[in-house]
Image (cartoon, rainbow, N blue to C red):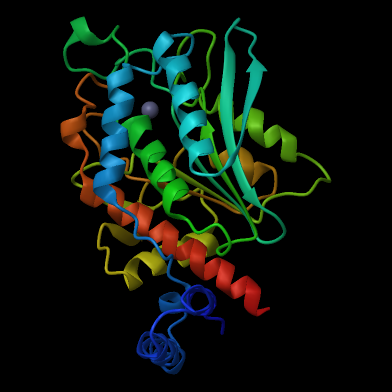
Length: 318
Ligand SMILES: [Zn+2]
């Protein structure tokens, strides 16, 4: 077992009093005795759900992030700037579409080697709130507080807290465009992930896992196992949530989703969709900030931070 953080910290405090060093050593020994992998592998900074909630708010302030809108363009700039500031390499991948629009996937990357983990969330908003109970509102765009902004907020907070030199070998945070316009003329679902996953088709190097988060900010959060997801990878992540005591994760299958995980699975990559599809405001004008809670963002982000740390630690032990 490795206790990388303890060792690194010790090096950094060489000038500090001996008592402090001794306490650190005892702490590390206690971790070792308990055999608790996730305790030693825990990220040094805590995921902060309330900080993530502020990022949901910031996205809503742009307005609906529909393709071609000024809000969508501002969103791409804001994502790129924030990720660069947090120390990530950022690439905006443009794909022209047959309908005349251009989709923009934002890919932040860090590290090298194995495992190679991809975390993704769509950032676009649906053009129309066609599930709205009020017919007069069905032609308006969806605000997308939960459907879009919540997953992005979790990834952005992870971008800030994840340690530079532990966790998986290579990590990609991908902000996917054009997920949410299915059943509209000239559009389809999951166009951004299809464009990105096309690069993993055939005999090329592929990520070891792809995790999608979508609609995970609902204050009444119940995340069931999703039936199109890789079962082994799902089991790992749900077990991590249970170990942390997050009962928003329910270890039973419920929905079968057409979501951004499918193109990665089709490319031969184990992929999971983390989604709570029990959301009455789905594709309505009521998908607003008041439906999303910091606690729910915390339950998802903290689970992923710990799972990444454990996965990285496990790889180093091999
Ligand atoms: Zn949607």
